[in-house]
Amino acid sequence: MTLIFEKLESCFPNSVLYRCKSAHPAVCESGPVFRHFPYRERHLQCLWADPRNRPSTLKTTDGEIVEIEHPGEWNLESGPDFHNAVLLIGKEKRRISGDLEIHIHPAGWNQHGHAGDPRYENVRFHIVYFQGPEIPGLIQIPLQEILSSDPKFSFDNIDLTAFPYSIPSGDFPLKGMDPDRKTDYLEAAGEERLRLKAERLALAMQNKEPEQVLWEELMASLGYKNNKAAFRKLASVMPATRLRSIAKTPGEAYSILLGLSGLLPKNPDPEWPPDTRNFIRSIWDFWWRQPSELQETALKKSDWILAGIRPANHPVRRLMAAAFYAFRIDASPPNYDGLTDFPDNFWNTHISWKTRCEPTALVGQSRANAIITNILVPFRAASGSADFALEKLPVEPDNSVIRQTAFTLFGPDHSPKIYRSALARQGLIQIFHDYLITHRLDEVGRFR
Image (tube, rainbow, N blue to C red):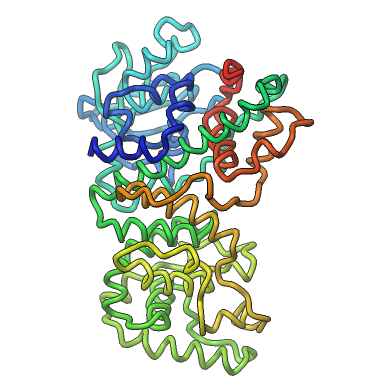
C-alpha cells in the first residue's frame, strides 16, 4: 500500500506544496494513520450532526455502550466543534453533558493546541476516527471499526455544503499575493484535491475489485448531488460484472437497472405516446423474467429525491447512460469520447416518458468533463497508471463555490485568468473545503 501512495505523490507532484503549508497538522503527518484517511474532519462533523449518517450503536474506547440524548449544537466559531452535548454512557446510562471535539486521530487534540486552551476546558467527549491513546479526562469514542463494518455507509455520500458553515467576512487574505504565485498556489491545491480522490479510490480497491470501484464512482456521478447515494447503492446491489452476466446489451442492462431502481412505471399513463408504452412494455418483458430474489433487492421510490429534478437530469434517463457504461468499463476505463456517446436508445429522442424532443445527450460535455477530472484521472492514478496530463484536463464551468472562494481570497477586482485552468478551479474547491467552510480563513493569509 505504501508503494501506491508513493506513486500518487509522483502523479501529483505539486500537491505537497499546498499540503505541507496547510496549518492543519494532520495533513503533513507522515504516519500512515493520517495518510490513509483521505477525508476531512468536516466529514466527521457532518456525520455526527446528521442522525441519518451517525451510527446507531456507539462505544467508548473502553467498550462501554454510548447513547446520544443530544449530539450538541454545532459551533461555527472558534472553540469546540459542538457545545452542550448530552450522552448516556455504559449499562447504567450515566448522563454526562459537556462540549464535544472531533479529530481524525486522538493525537489531534495536542497537535491542534487544545490542551490548556480555556475555550476547550468544558470538553468532555472526544470523537475520533482512528483508535489511539486517550486524552486524560475525555471520553473517547472511535468510529473506524463501526463505520467500516457497515457496507451501506460511504463518506462520499456526505454533501459537505449541505450542513451549516460560517461565511467569512473582512479582508481578502490573498489579495496582495504576487500575481505569478496565485495560479501556482491554486493549481497546487488542485493537485492535492485530485491526489486525495485517487487515495480514496486506492483505499477502496483494497476491499473491492478496481472495476467495481470505478462502477460505483461512475454511478454516483450520474446521480449528481441529490441522488448520488441512491445511484451508489444501486451500483452496490448490481455490480457491473453481474449486470453483464445477465444482460447482453445496454438495452437489457437498462431494464435490469430500471427495475432495480424501483422507478419502473407499473401502469403506463394512457396519455403517453404509443412508442413510450411499447418501450415500457419491452422493459417489463425482460424484468419480470428475472429471479424473485433479484427483484426483492430493488430500491424503493423513497430512496430517490425527485422533487425539483429537471426532466433531462431525471434518474430514469441517467440509468440509460449507466447501462452503456457497464459495458465500457470491462477491463479498462471508458475512453473520454465514450462518455457522451449513446447510440440508438429511447432517451435520445425523449425528454420524459410523455414528451418527445430533439436528440438530447444523456450526458453532456460539461458532465463528461467533470467525470474525466474527478473520476477517470484519479482512478488511473490509483490503478498505477500515469497516462494523463494534468495541464490538459478539460475545464469545467465555474460554479458558486469557485466564484465565492475566488472573491473571498482575492477580492472583487481579481482577474478570472488566475483560475481559468482546470487544476486552478479544482484548487479553489479544495481551499473552500479546507478553509472557508471550516472558518479557518485567517490561516490562509500567510501564503502571501
